[in-house]
Length: 105
Image 1: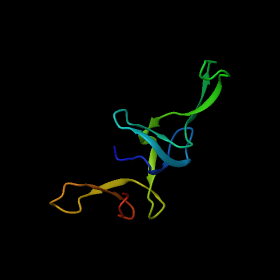
Image 2: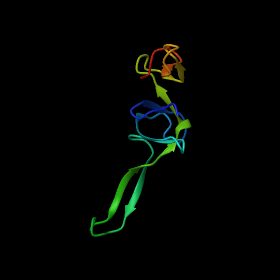
Image 3: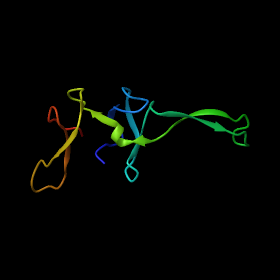
């Protein structure tokens, strides 16, 4: 998965289209992620010993990673992610912005 925790993203499809936020959690095996302030669901709690009142809480729900696009911190534009190898001896890939060709890491 090309996206990481802490990346600023823009939601490009779904009921939250147009919202921006920061990735809080990534689930690479499922291809899903959670974004702070986006895709919030109501969760109803029964009264219990831990929570005697019960009630309704807001909960972040994961959604598909294909519904977001990263926002480049340098050019502040939504952009796709590319990779480049800085040197041939090392085997570390660097994520780059496809528009301004600057590093995203």
